Image (tube, rainbow, N blue to C red; front, side, top):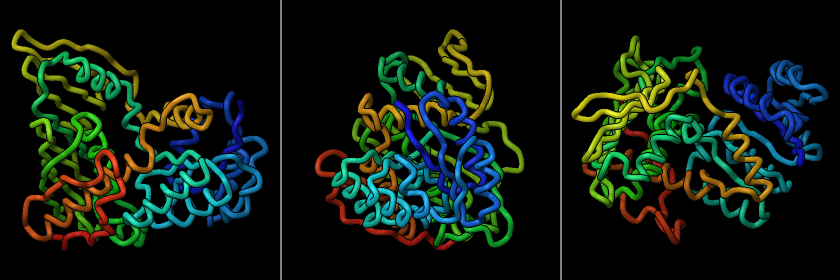
Amino acid sequence: MRHRLAIIGCGGMEGTHATGMDLLADRLDIVATVDPVLERAEAAAARFPGARAAAKHTEVLDDIDAALVVTPHHTHYEIGTDLLAAGKHVLMEKPLALSESECLDLIEHAERVDRTLMVAYPMRYHPLVVELKRLLDANQIGEVFQISIWTEQRTQYADGHWAHSAATLGGGQLFSHGCHYIDLLLWFLGDPVSGTHVGTRRGTPWLEGEGTSNVSLEFANGALGYHFGTWGARGTKLGYSIHAHGTEAMLEADLRAGKLRIYTRSGVKTLSRTDQHRKYVDRELGQFLDCIEGKAPVPTDGPTSLQGLRVIWRLYQAERERVVADLTGLGFGDPWRSPGLDRLPVPAGR
């Protein structure tokens, strides 16, 4: 079965996803590339024989079955709404949208028209992360009591870029990039019950929101989760690292080195390796196609994505109030519509 796909948004992330599409050429046809800067759409179209370039997503709706949306965050809701109204399947770059009400509207719209709505969280498809999750679920390190995730990178765009604005980004580093790792912590450990976030603009003055984040979470099973992320790193040792501590051993996924290691009292052993540090968007896109065909469930569907965003919004709120966030009752389980949050402002930068 072949699928006609449009790439909507031909900025930096388009090139990342295009590599994955090359690996799935036997399952899909890229029939359209869309960007308000038509020259970018034309450059992207040149990679795919027969693809049409357009400046507006509404120009290509009759030509496609599905779309990958890789546009600025504040455009996700409008574009997603138009695609679903036209009966198209949607793979939306994270975040799903910038408010709870927008997310709920997209989720309910997808349900009404019976179309796949999937949010792009490619870290779930990294081979080392997949293997780490398998080992955790198999109790290979005993009872897990702490998982820590570090991401250290330098992220700065040209002056006036939409990602520097808290209004168009949706927040700061935690909302835009940390959402990947909040998603992983929830996937690994289940329902959170409380947490804290402390962020700062120090070191990243180009951002309106925080450029460095520290998140601590307590989960219903008693385990703890931690995420440190920065867009201000001028150097790094940890890079992208995940440490999972259990009562019998510790697992380390060193994503830059491409190694999954296990540490015990008797020493360290490398369990698996990958050849390269990259985003496994081909696996993610393959999963999306499987979901469209009814061969697999949607792992990061609308409700799952919304749960992670609700945690972040509640953490932001608690940070402003300088209290520990109550993360219970955020719709983990049934019904997921219940919390009634809406978009929460980012804490004032410090």
